[in-house]
Length: 468
Ligand code: BG6
Image (cartoon, rainbow, N blue to C red; front, side):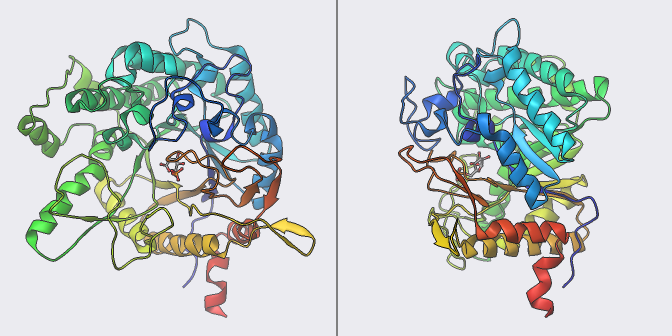
């Protein structure tokens, strides 16, 4: 097998402000919903900010950004996916003026990336709606939040237009279906299905408005959408199971369909009708939705199984165990071939450039001393990533237009699902435990040099052992 990764392929890693920056109340930053999720998206919503919440200080990227970016450069990154903390720019979300100090922080970071020739791929909203917007307006359940969001987007577009060209609108937008607070800032009546789909509509509208703005004013920008992509397998060859798969797949496709094709597909209209879901569409909304994205990005961690006995549509992806696969410690099916399948599916369906903007192996690492150096021997992570990249390479050979790969958490960061530090994804170990103790020192894991070789050889090193 040979490497098919094209020249100028984006190689890098992906982060989110709330999981790395810390400095949650420094330099005028306002609170975001993350400060009220001390146990992550799987835990309860708190009514106050608890000191035990690891995201308050996270891995202190706010002060160590240069050191961390230098390490990314040492690995050879040509791209870094990161997000802007909305509440660093508009502390309450509905402020009159932006917070200059917050803008200055990203000025420094983007300038440095430019200097190092690392392309920033910036997520506008990565699970970090300003808390005030959630409390006062119920996040994207209200159309008012679209206006506040657009004001924030206009501000950062104008400020960073010479430094950032690749933008993603909403991180894992389909997570609104099962995590409306985290994905859309919906705090009240989160279980009301009608309200949830109203938030879905408003968020999709906001995403299309971003595309529209870029098309009108920032013509060299490339705007992408971002969803969780989960290949679905059938339990048996029975047609009932295949119908269940088809319906479950709509959870993968619905958000992409609207953002890449520009309208609501028939299956969702039917679902709305049969479930008495009546979302408020205003005149002109359908026209706005026609502003489709330039490229498609997604996160890929696992595949799942369509279970005809658990046939509740649009209730989220429960990672049902596939007996033919191994699982991570957190019960996620490990399925490299699933990546090839989903890449082909998305390419066939949309014919737009694709980017894998999250993929990686969350595991408990052990810091050891080897030849006088502190490191982690993370062969399990290397194997996981190697197997996935080989399947991405296969997809390129199948004809898929894949333009980049940014692995999740190139440096250990706080988990979104469980707010733990011990679920580590990085090539770089950060000395911080689940109780918040540690020096915050950074150490290179074995995967650091492995990834460096992959990037330097544009994927060729993935096949070295095989070709020997
Ligand atoms: C995605 C998110 O859900 O997966 C990230 O976009 C998140 O924010 C990542 O961290 C991994 O999930 P977790 O729960 O292991 O952090």
